View (cartoon, rainbow, N blue to C red):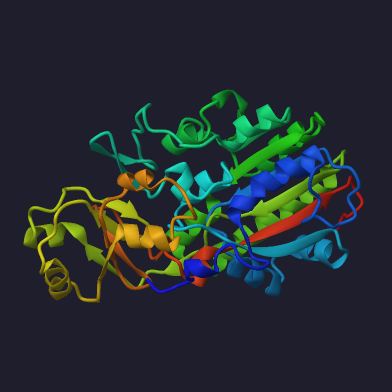
Length: 381
C-alpha cells in the first residue's frame, strides 16, 4: 500500500481535513482570518459542503475539461480559490467524516476503520447497528459550536437521516435537515443562509462517491455530475442575500481496483482466523497470537505480496494521527495485513466495486478545499 508517508503530514503549507471545521469556528468568531484573504469583509456564515469521493485530481480534470464553467469564472474573477488538502488514514468515509466533524485525527476520535472492535464484538460503523456505547471520543463540531455561541446545521440526503453513520457523527439529531432530490440541496442550504445566523452549515453529498464506485471516475456520467455540481455552485452564488463562505471539500479520492483478496478463502486455509476481521481501509487487522510462519503462509496463499506489520508500529509512525492515547488502538487489532496499492480485501460476497479507496496513495489522500465567496448576485455567469 505504497503512498504518502506520515512523516510528511502536517508539515509545511499542506493543510489537513482536520483544519476545516476549527478554521470555520475561528473565522466566525473573528479570531483567525489567516487562510482567507479574499475580499469578503464581514461574513457571518460558512457552508462546508463535503462531496464524498471527490479527489483533488478529479477537480483539476473537471476544470481542465471545462465541465465547471461557473467555478472557473469565479476563480478567474478572484471570487473563488482552490487549495489541496491531505486526508487522514485510512481514507474511508466514516474515518474521514469523523475527522472533519471533530477537527481531530482518527487516533483521537476513535473511528479507526469501517469495521472495528468494541465491547467484545465487532461494529460496522457504515452498515450498523452501532451500539449506544460506541461513540466519538472527542466533542463533535456541533458541541464545539454550541460552546462558542455559534449555530450549527447539518444537511444530508433524506435517505441518510437515520443512517448509522449519520447518527454516530451527529448525536444531537435536532439540527439535521434533509433534501429528497439532488436539486433540492442548494434550496435547503439557501433557506438556512437566509436566516443570517452566525454559524456553520455542514452539507454532505454522496453522489460522486457512489458514481465512482459503480462506474469509475472520468466517464460520461462523471462528466454530467461535474456539470450538475457546477450548476449548484451557481445556485448558491446567485441566490445568496448575505455575505458568507462556501467551502467545498471531500473526504477522499478514488483509484481503480487492481485486484481483490478473498478473506473467506484465506479462512479455509487458516480456520482459526476470526469470522469477521476489523477493516482498516484496504487492509484488515487480526488480534491474536500469530504463529511464527503466519506471514509466509499468507504470502504463499496470496497472488500478490502482503505486508504484515504490528499495528503499534504504524501507530507510532503517525499513520493514525499524532500523539493520542494508545488505548484507542484496541479498537483495531494487533497486526495489519496490508495488500499492495490498488488491491483490497474482500470480506463478503456482495458485488464489488471497480474503483475504491482507503489507502495512502496520492489520489486517495489528496482532496480539494475550494473557497467561494457568496456576496449576493455579484458573480453571475
